[in-house]
Image (cartoon, rainbow, N blue to C red; front, side, top):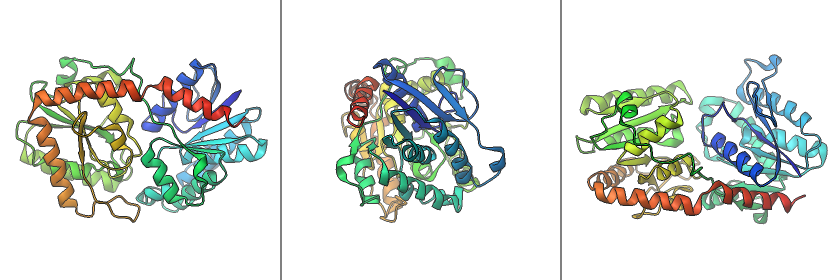
Length: 394
């Protein structure tokens, strides 16, 4: 059985959770004996079994959604000979859909996010957001199987696309490579990044996008004890507007307290493990999060997670055992915006204060989080379940 797996992100061009997922899934699937051909966006790779595709010169400078379609059509052409095609995110969905029609093979879609629940993407894509939404809806409608990365995501899929047959929407969690994601006690790295390893710290890792809730965290951080550092590993802004909002929020926070560290470059895994390991707690203030691989990365490094009780986060964080869940009442317009932003900020600050004020309890939660990651989120388990889905279709 040859599976052609399509992704916008693949090493070395990875900047989000979907790229991490694809990388680890491919490795684990190949270890099961599955013949996987990767078709990825970007510059040529040296890895055997991987083909890369650039935007056609004729579409250079076009709306990003239109340029994406240009890449997808090239990929669809080359899928010929595969037994099954598996696409990840709307960027790759059109390639999978067209290839399925052309060659009469099953198309499996893994949903890492949903366009109807990311209306702020219109700020970034303009009319391209309508195109990306059409691509995703069309691909989901005709897919042989749709894989959700959490039960919360499955509910969102069925709510967003009520025409789908529930029986074809499966849940297969994101995972964590427990061999490479381990604690890294390296004070030289953390000091070099401007972090004092002696002071308690709250760490955020994520892209600067509406869904990650960073502006709410900046407000909550003003309410933390003065000795607590706030470490923001945040970059890749969606728009100049959200970048400006975050930049202003960080500047205001720095006027109020010391120990506000903003790292806006992509850290190596070694550096990120050191930052996470040195933290008192990790924080995930997202208003939309299908699961959140970064939460698993923090747990694997042995630190607790304070996360919003939304999407798939409650399936990762065992409230009171591996971290704390922050309640949120959200608008039902697809934005995930808190109905009462002040209350959400206050609840987020309260949960963070509770964790950072009891280092022993925080360490215990971190140890429990590592065990939970080992028991529930290994890539071997996820690859075996994914292969079962493939075999049911071919």
